[in-house]
Length: 66
Image (cartoon, rainbow, N blue to C red; front, side, top):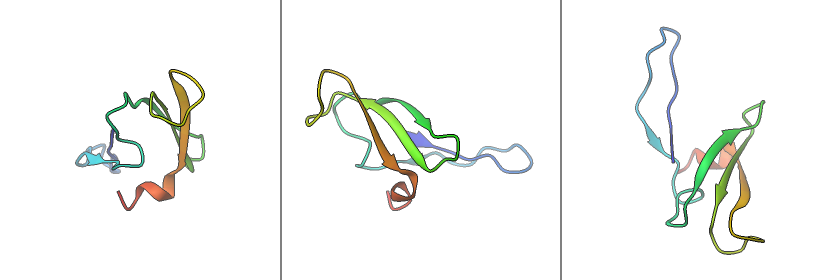
């Protein structure tokens, strides 16, 4: 998954890969931020979950380092 930002003029910046906290080979998808942009949610089939497709989250500040 990738993220981008838009400046005050409405111009989109470059895509930034969110790194290994959320990007695996296990069907990571359906990204969404909490209303305050503090938590990043996504759906994944990675190991360690409770079923086939689980909801995962990470504090958004942890994504800054990639």
